[in-house]
Length: 229
Image 1 (tube, rainbow, N blue to C red):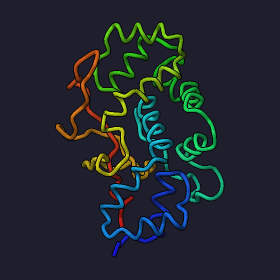
Image 2: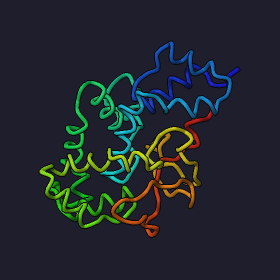
Image 3: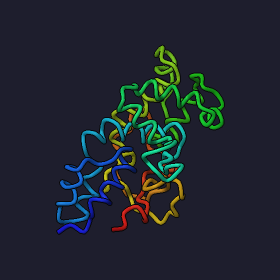
């Protein structure tokens, strides 16, 4: 019998899915016999692929950090919600990823980190260097600069590219939420952005430039306290 209670399943849903679990979902997951099976699969669903993974990639690509998942008032049912909760549910309720990216690029945090919301070569180079973890070719820079897209749509063009999706560090399934020795930030819930051990994953073929070993590889790691039974 699983040692994971239905209450804990609901807690994981409020953190990962930015909503409560349904009664059927609580029963389905808690019925699994091994806690590790639940941890491995609960983030590996069609819903996660549609609403969760894109938001995680967007946060890491735009801001170089995990999302702020902690509820400001400690109650997921009332009052202001975390930025992560708000953004996931905006997608769930019909906002496009492009509209969400426009909000990210127009934010004070983006401007503080990148200096400008305009499409520039420097911003493209930065996204490749810190998100895709590789150098960018002159042909790639030229292609984006002449694409007719604004910065927000170049951002999601990179964060949602096949290369980014194949770059295993950006997934949320437990098998790819690499445990590290990081001390979790108190506001990051089960998500922590930090260095991964060498050889943790094998990046896909890197078109346009070799993998830049000088850049610390980053990814989502388990928060030790988030998975306590």
